[in-house]
Image (cartoon, rainbow, N blue to C red; front, side, top):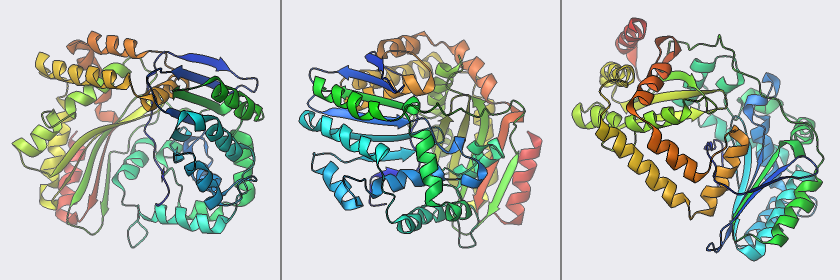
Length: 437
């Protein structure tokens, strides 16, 4: 899309120290003054996303995010609104995830108060103009995941369906073409009125912040009605993965996923789980790249990834390969998962610990990184500073990684997904592999 928006947002899991206050309407304001910074990073998060949507309103959070860029009472068109933001020197970005909708920008210090006021306008007085035009834009985004027969071919979305089933975490953040087509302006306004409220807001600012800017936060975002906190629908303990999903479509490669339903960010083992993910895939010397590409030549692209949520996560290993390589690539990804707890060396752990500590050190001087981290403290329920993060990284030992691997890579939590020109023979072999686990 031409505007700076994305469907999926990276989740935040940690936070630095800073000031925290609760405004009169229940909104949380976190701030960190960084004397050496020359700009201000701003993010306003709403505790609502696709996870909170009933089936009949699938995609409403994402569609609403788009519609908020269509103007406000003070700036009644998309052009007027974008022009106002960009005249400050920055650009407003937004992203909808399963659990949050986040609006963010980076601006010069003198423009920070006005930027906050512009964001508050979107929360207070959206005009919802040109709804059908924006619906067409969002529909194009959804169609990008479908083939010419309207069949879902996005491997990540299919993996979510396999792991989470009928739970909203298993559904597309953008909804379906049908659910999008059924949404009306009154649905968007009701969703906005119910969820864009003080109790659901987290405001984080970092960098060369001023007293004037903090007052702007209190005066504008603090004036939004209090409302009530959006409850989170838990993933049932009985939820288990659908073992195998194979989708036949055109193309030259097969997109593979070997995924597991795993603990979420509030779990005590989460720091070890994230470190384990780096053992598997963090650089070209990590296990996935080395095994799949350098040692066995099974794929051009291979990776590991974790999609984290409050109470659960999806831990995936993936690859894109030729159809004839798909069975062996799947077996190899399964081997990497099931043997993840075996033979972890001191050198492997030292490598990922060094890389983690280096990233933490770089974040010390980034207002954007601190804003993300402060949001994470509020949204994910964790409380830690960068110093604590470094301490945790140094404290993790091989037994912690082994225990994390045993909790994550369980056969009963497994889903195997393959999308591409599979053919009958390849699908039969993949089915045999799935049944053998």
